[in-house]
Length: 332
Ligand code: UDP
Picture 1 (cartoon, rainbow, N blue to C red):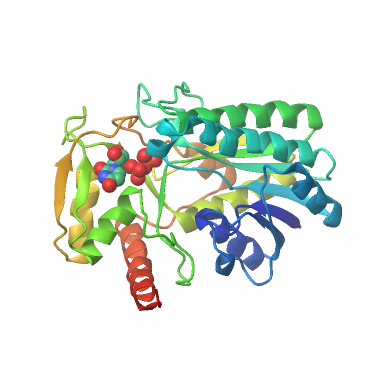
Picture 2 (picture 1 turned 120 degrees about the vertical axis):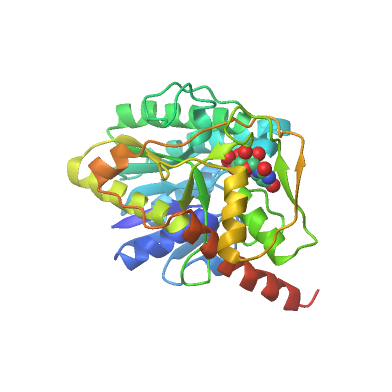
């Protein structure tokens, strides 16, 4: 099947492209390379460089590649903290871009639209684990923009007779076992990459954002999932949707909550490295405790994640060690 992957040069999208090609699919990548890298794009994928908020760019792709049957939409902005001071940018990149993409899809032959959503749409759920029908109360523009996109996708797919699969990601980390794909930035913002970075470069003190949340040790609780397990679910979701002509919404997580302090402690144990840390003030917009129920993905899609927290940390460490060495040896 031919699949359009937006954001296929980025962290998660590039993993999806490798997995789709490995499973015999033909992949077309659309990416503006704003945060992605050309070198991440699998050699067998066809690459269109451009912005998905440009309808003409997308319409040209669908014209050239009229046999595209499914879209996997990964492109978007992903930082809770940044979204708070750049709400317009987040609604533009996460919600408005979906509107443009769907309007370009109107002249295509797609039967399934797959979307990367987020646990941030739930906000602080009243009870954990969170299931897909729980209340949606986003606490930041990132979550709000993704929820707006979800609603638009549902409305549009219903009237166009297109199936959708929405995945709500909990905290994604780790890197590809081929050593080529991972978060290729030194400007990190997510928890596990930052802990690992401090383990590699001890001058970078890891900072815990607040220790007076209503959790057992006072630090926030999150649910971690390896990027390869995550993209595996996308393949299963695509196959399920096509075979059964169904739409669905699935959480993707591990069903286990770990506090920031527990993640830090696990990293020091697994890596056998003392990691410098300090506790600083809370970050605005962080819910205290969230983790997923993934019964639906397991029962309906037959999804079986393989990586636990220790393996996720090790995978991130192996990638970051090589990435750090490579970036230090590059001429400035
Ligand atoms: N966090 C932290 N220090 C950091 C980065 C993150 O204490 O340097 C905390 C953050 O406050 C949150 C959790 O780790 O409670 C996960 O944050 P992240 O940004 O990785 O993902 P989010 O859950 O916000 O999508």
